[in-house]
Length: 227
Image 1 (cartoon, rainbow, N blue to C red):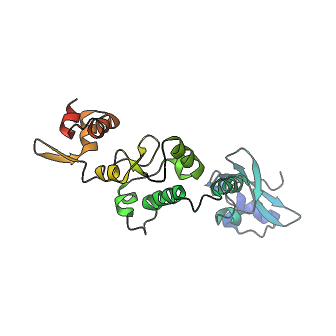
Image 2 (cartoon, rainbow, N blue to C red; image 1 turned 30 degrees about the vertical axis):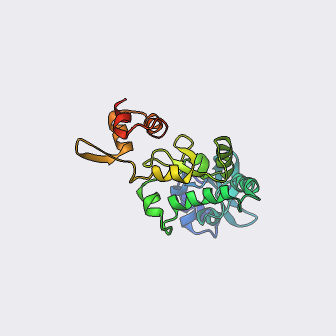
């Protein structure tokens, strides 16, 4: 491969007479990751009189690209990332005005948009969204429809100190959701007050089981924690 550099890049650049700044053709870039691309080699084009980076994409494909396009974020994959984004866009097409999509978008804003008024109570205290939902509305929609979603229900986190995920979410009425707020989940035992989730973790119990005993079996938190 013409112009391959693995060491002494300044000498090689001088001999080739390349017009690329030295900073882009330097051994320090080898092994660096940009998005899905890892810089592996340099190649000089005699025809174009330009240097290129030879990168390997996470999907296994190789791509030859101008360094500045990688460094400025324009090219971050062999093309597979753009295809995935286009595919995802097609899956959400026609859903952006639906109530379920508004719930999904609101969930993301609460967790990741610092300008949102509710951010301090969500993202600001470490509440996140699991990767499979965060990167795919289609996956979230599939879970929602398979787990009881209807137009009169809202998404609710069973443990309010844990993020959004299939294991920690359910669809509930507004009344049920209000009952599951952090303030309502404060439990006092022997003069010590802390969230129900903290009591559960402290005693090595299963939060789902304790929550079921409280909301479905109508036990007091103290009773449920002793079972």
